Image (tube, rainbow, N blue to C red):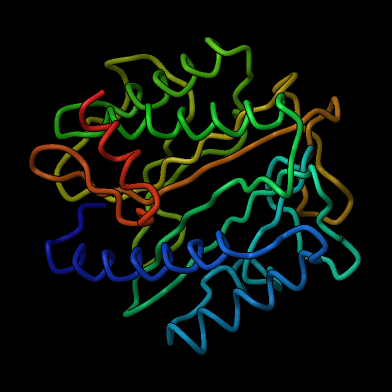
Length: 261
């Protein structure tokens, strides 16, 4: 569970590379593309440009390098050559990358074209909830502090928190201990220690938190058909706080606000 400084240095490399994948997606005109086209582009970028391994491909029998969750899909949406991203969609791309034996995991919900205000608001609040959780991370804090901050921010804005999926420890394996819930009680749960590395990944629903599994065995949707959004970063507990290993360059303003807010 505890990573050495040398191991965290290697995870920092994986995280920086993964951040560059999402930065590449930032520049794509997503409207009109199929999710399979995005998947193939990401696979080529990870393998050819970054000389890395897409860690999701083959994990648990999964065939693709990313999850793509559109509109009412909560998580684990699969790429499809028939699924064309339309103007007004929101879509989460959840991507993992392995380099030097260590894995980083990150996701972002993208706005395709010009989504309606209620969709933009959900995406914004979900990203804020992730940062609220990250802000709790430091030695001596508890995992319950992270989940409490996320859930409190979601409730404040009228959204529900998906409880069936959560963040997780990460390192040489994609999923390690501990589980990082997106709800909880402040001051409760595992005490955080320097060297822990895990993901924080809130999933917020516009309506009910109830979800349903589709017949493909992977895709999870909102039961009421309303929108869902997700953001995720891999973080490390440092001696005096937290380091976001998958931080993207365009999030430096978010990081500054997080440190001073």
